[in-house]
Length: 398
Ligand code: FEO
Image (cartoon, rainbow, N blue to C red; front, side):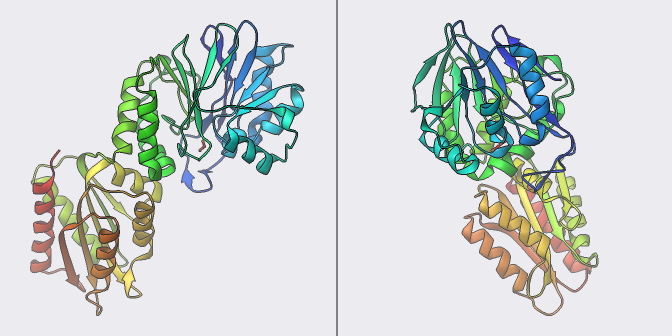
């Protein structure tokens, strides 16, 4: 049981998931994940903010019982409909007859579609800026579409400076006893925030920017996201990380990602990494696309200014795990990187170059340094690899 009073009248009632291995069926969860839910108690009404995955309903129900006793929440505010948060809505409706679901028009449409709850009297539809007075606690609803789905909204309690932010500012990692950042070591959650943002929300940077603009004038003492710690001491830091990532603004460092069948392209990657180091670059992340997780590769590509991608030629195009990575970056509209490419071929010289150039053009991320090697390394190709690394290091601005 992981309930906690955040401030008087606002309680954490979320749950941990240490069973699911892949979030959305895709993204590894080495530290688990939390599905956060909150209760807001006013003098005249009580609101539940979001639910949890249906797989965790039993613990969620226990948490609610512990906080509520024999009371019934008057409202269920649905900030986000992805089933990791909405999955328990039908059970909540059954458990608390008379509860009204608060959401915008798109939310209500999705609830009907996902959960077949058709009774219109169940819903209280809200629009951007609407308020709901719970008695000394006023919920203000801010529509923030595409952070991360079209129906997403945030709920702000002006009297307490508390922002229920949906997926924004979320991160992977189950909560290990503590709930608020001030009562725990947060390094792992901050690190995981890069992976969470880039993997889950990364495509929607311009919408995240709109949401940040919408909340920029609010006094925020606590950010209560749907995943990870409640942010209190590190509010400014996590807002800054989200701002930079959603503007595709990188940090100093270089990510090298390569695909190699027999070690020849890998040899180039090692040479490039060594030349970057000689040029003074300290943060160099090297990923073999065959063994690294797509999740980590996306995260580092989002995080660091330099991006160097290499591939052996395979079936007259890019090696499949490298292709998957480039496709994932294209979908997420990654931009503004110091981009270099390298590759190897046995008989089809132009294939990898052409394919990587195609990504570069579509992503408007020009190739600033490139090399191609025939079959295996010799002194010339190793020198070219060194020159490539040196050139990328020279172009870094951070
Ligand atoms: Fe944690 Fe977009 O759901």
